[in-house]
Amino acid sequence: MADTDKPLLIKRYASRRLYNTETSDYVTLEDIAGFIRAGREVQIVDLKSGDDLTRQYLLQIVAEHESKGESVLPINVLTDLVRSYTTQATSVVPQFLAASFDMFRDSQSKWVENMNSMNPISKVPGFEAVQAQQEAFVKAMTSGIGNTWTGPGKDPNAESGDEDLDDIKKQLAELQAKLSKLSK
Image (tube, rainbow, N blue to C red; front, side, top):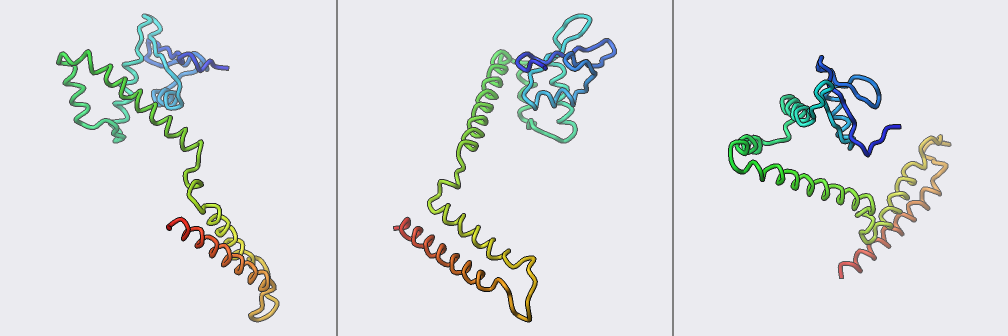
């Protein structure tokens, strides 16, 4: 089993092929992008020199996605990045970008956590009554499906259909009463 806490080690051979050391097979840039999207850290090193090539390949992945029309970085951001390489701001830009993405990831994970921990619509007053009414309505609408008619204009479920309709009317009246109390 692979240790997902450690970065996935990818070795680049002299032929420029990329080798996944965990699965012992060759991978593409798209495979590496998939590992990263899945939350895995990746480290790409040159087999011969041991140089870390991760940054170079990550930039290549971004460039390929941008060239395919999958634009993520607006032109003004790309321009500012190029400009930052020629100014004294170079030392500040990497820390700023790292902090910005950290905040983005943190807020995104908190949002997902909040959405998973509670269903906001279920907190709306009267939600249960609306849900019950919808279930009764669907039941009433589908109760005659698949049954055969016993004669012209006669439905064998007519009596239960009337009961379902009365039940829906009752639930609707209860819901309207609850809503009128809330609006006061």
